[in-house]
Length: 373
Image (cartoon, rainbow, N blue to C red; front, side):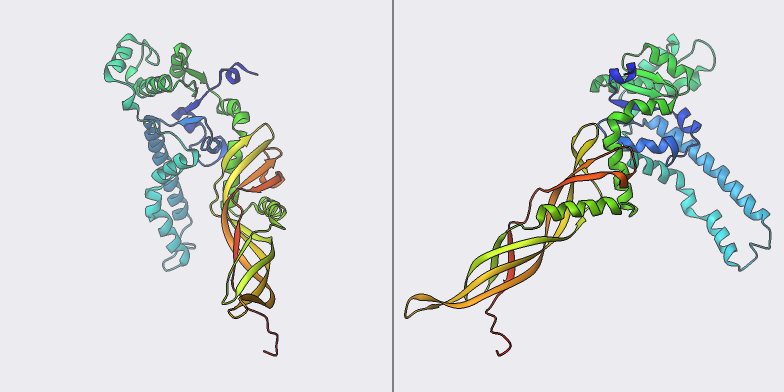
C-alpha cells in the first residue's frame, strides 16, 4: 500500500492546468472518470475560481473550434453549400446556433452534475488580509520573484481549500502541474500534491469501484445498454416471488370465503435509473432501487348465501378467479464480479423484495353458472 493510500484522502482537488492538459474534454478520457465521485464518500472539490477559469478556457476553445469549422465550411465552396441547398441550411444552423453560444456554460454545468462536484465559494474560506499577508511575505504559492499577481488565483484556491479541509477534518489530494502548487502543498498540513491525474485517480479507484459502478450502471440504463443486467434482475424477482401466497380480497353480493391463493412474477420496471449502495466488500455490493413489479395471481373462493329461515349459509359453489396486480417496492440487488469491468459481465446473485404485496383484490366475483345460464 502506498503512502497516499495509507493516508486516506477524503477529497480531491484538480487544478485548471490538468483540465487544459486533458484538452478540456470534460465528458471523456481521464476527466470523464471524475464521475466516479458523484455517489462516493470522497468529495470532489471544484472551487469557483477554477470553475470560472475552466469556463473561460472552454469558451476560448469553442470559439477557435467554431472559427475552424466555419473556415472549413466556407472552403468547401459553392458546390456543397450553394443557396437553397439543405446543406447550406445545415451550415447556417451549425455556425449561428444559439446552442453553440451557451455550450461552455451547459457543459460545465453538466460536468458539475455528473461528478457531484462541490463548487466551493472561496470567498467564504479565505480573507483578504490572509491573502495579502501571504503575498507580501512571499509564502507559497507566491514566489519570491516574478509576477506574483498571476499567482493570486492559485493562492485563493489553495488557502480556501486548506481552511475547508481543516473545518471538515479531511485530507485533500491536489492534482496539478504547477510548481507553485507543489511548493504550497509541501508545507500544507491538509493538502498533498500529485502532478499525474492517472496516478491521482488510482489512489481512489479501489475504494471508489462500487461508486464508479453505480455511475456506469445508471448510464447504461439511461442509454438502454443494460439488457443482461435487467434480465438477471428479472430472473431474481421471479425466483423471489413465484409461489407467494398473499391474502385474498374480493367484492360480491354473496358471502365468500378464501380457499387459497398463489401468485407468480410477470414483469418489472425500475421507477428511476438510480441506485443506493447499502453494503459492499471487495467483489460484492448490494444495491437498493425502487421498482414497479407486476404479478399474476389465482385465487380460490367458496360462495354462499345466508338463509334467514334456517339461519345458515347455503353453499353456492366455488370459483377460481385470476387477476394481474402491480405494486411498488424497494428491491435489494446483490451484485458480484469485477466492479470495474463491463456491466454485462456482472452477476446478479440475489434479488430481495423489501415490501412484497400482502393482499390481492380479485375484483367482483360471482358463481360460475356455466353456458346454460
